[in-house]
Length: 69
Image (cartoon, rainbow, N blue to C red; front, top):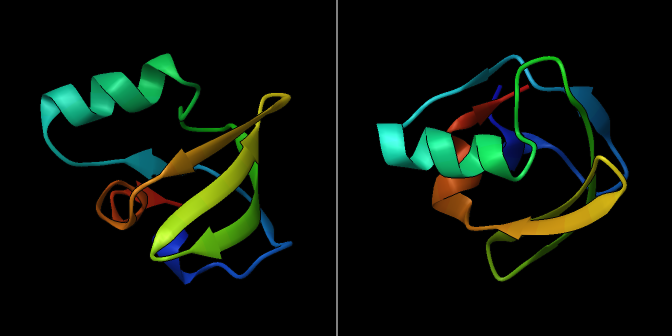
């Protein structure tokens, strides 16, 4: 299921990152790699804020829809 389906407080492991090549590379640089555990902190205006690798990162709804958990 896409990251956009998770509710605040849910923790999952990334299964796959889709989308265009430049999107996948950008997400990989900030830690969104298969097998990485992430926790949804909040959703604000369609953007998703997640805790990943000791950091909080906000991604747009479009990017979050490409991240399968």
